[in-house]
Image 1 (cartoon, protein in one colour):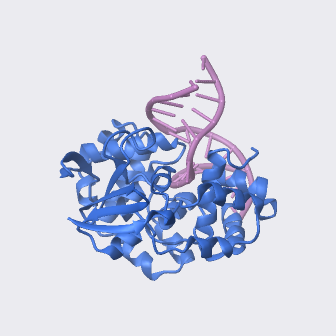
Image 2 (cartoon, chains in turn cyan, red, brown):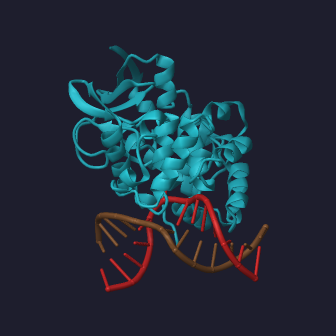
Image 3 (cartoon, helix red, strand yellow):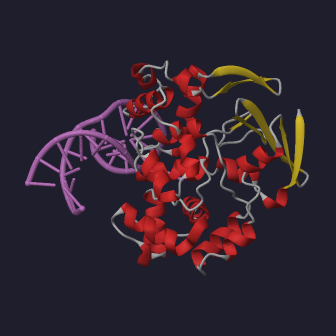
Length: 289
DNA sequence: AGCCAGGCAAGTG
DNA sequence: CACTTGCATGGC
């Protein structure tokens, strides 16, 4: 297997993979959010990707090209440059100083989509459990690094799953979102490839054709799998952050707030969202209801 | 025992 | 367009 090495001062791998943005990575031992090994794996194009931080070096083992590895972990982004271009803000400066090295991953479209179809009215650890249960039930069992793991199903594989079978995994009413959206993709009525040709506004409208994809899920999937770094998902936490620290940007309508934050933070608004979101959840910055 | 969680679609006025 | 309602499940 190929091996790539990167300076780990540029990325906090553990934080990046466990902050709740991705559901597509796992630890070899232990749950993603608890204690366990510091060796992580995911898949891209069916190929495993193993990442580990040791002695100040990020080591990635995979058959994938270096370009794809850089893309998956967003190693091309110059964090200093991103933060220097945001308007001055005490909340953001504190978040950045505490969470330096947090990067916006880029997962595969389909597994990312299904995770966020599961996300409405749900806590992050349970979304992760749903993702892993779906992989175990409908994905392929494969050996990675000598361990038996499950690759998340491709659309044609998950298309075999009935709504009832999904409900048995505890996904509740989200089963309908998964079944209908998977069906659209599997029978060729929806292609995410086209998203890459579009600007952000067009892409958001396009992806909302999928059943169960509203404003918030659209922004998550565009940000975390399609490289639209201007996407700023506004969930309950993000909403509270904006209200507390950027009241002038707050609005009751999602689209209006979205427009405001994108205009305020610019092309990398998603990075501001990710740092503020995680800082709020970690009590690094305060938020009011 | 209620209440709530990274919202969404469908229905009504 | 603005506003309301129902929705599954598990943890606290």
